[in-house]
Image 1 (cartoon, rainbow, N blue to C red):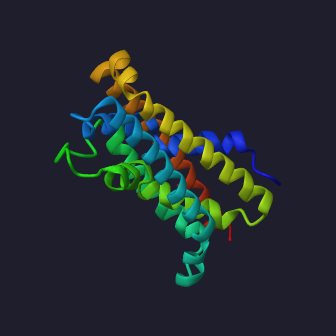
Image 2: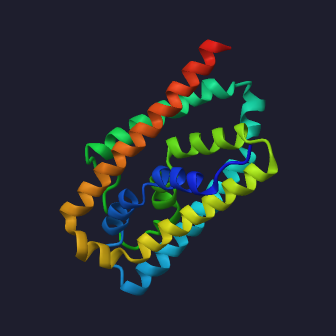
Length: 198
């Protein structure tokens, strides 16, 4: 059965947590000009797309290499994702703003903020559990759209900062954290159920 691209898009969007990324992006790009911020936004979106597609398409070889079952990985990846999401839901800062001249595109904005350990685990799991090319095509399309959405949110960071303010960004980040907690719990429960039934 082919995966629904829109459903996959929503899952990827929850995993990427664009408003949590936005709050980190704003913190890390203080002192940047508007043009530099916009350029950085698209670079993060491109980095997210490339990292995610590579993990999704080639991550299944990790299972073969280490002899890990998909359900064991579901439980592990779900647990890591849940721990990450708890930090988001509690409003803990993911990063400290540091040297303004340091390139923050790949580390930390793409990895581990946008594509964190839990997201990596979910991508590896998706890639391993979707063997058919129609499913893979739908997932890559969903990843592309979700990465583009992250880019658009970051591109509009100045407008979001003015509209929501610091408090608003914190509230949205915490709500995203709750959604990610629920997604992580679902991954863990599926892994446990499948493991016990096998």
